[in-house]
Length: 183
Ligand SMILES: Cc1cc2nc3c(=O)[nH]c(=O)nc-3n(C[C@H](O)[C@H](O)[C@H](O)COP(=O)(O)O)c2cc1C
Image 1 (cartoon, rainbow, N blue to C red):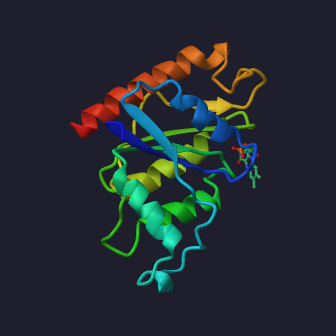
Image 2 (cartoon, rainbow, N blue to C red; image 1 turned 45 degrees about the vertical axis):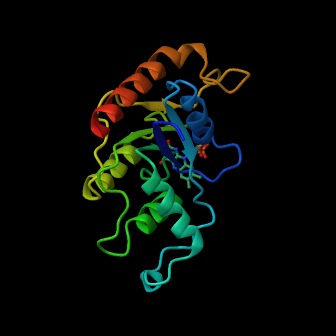
């Protein structure tokens, strides 16, 4: 296992999700002591507080993966000016039962990509609000609101030349910050 395993939560279940591609490409910009694992959220049941005493195996798996991580990376689209329900569902699952949230203290990066002009700004702000409540410190700057545009990814799925410098700087800041938080 790498020194800094990061749990990546992608807020889209779509097969050709831009955000999943962004999450995969971002991982390529990190140094070797970091490893990124996209956690599975598409098989979680809808959160129901009645199930707190007997959580599904998929919920136990999600919580174990978050516990094992030294940092978090949220990569999400914006749905109707907020985060997608599937992402909220995953956040709720790993926050319960009361007093047994696994999120607290894990440093998180928040980034996202959408076709709209504000590039997930509202969704990210809503997400930061939830994470603040869950005691998850988030990297404040640089903010990254990515609008889906031709050429964002190259033929190999890496970040294309137009955005590479900015996203490399974003990753460098994220890496330094996770190391500082984990020290
Ligand atoms: C239910 C729904 C709501 C959406 N709402 C927004 C929105 O509020 N802002 C926005 O920029 N794009 C919105 N979009 C468009 C998404 O940016 C677009 O579908 C994007 O491809 C989603 O990310 P993904 O490719 O990772 O699935 C919405 C899409 C859906 C399906």
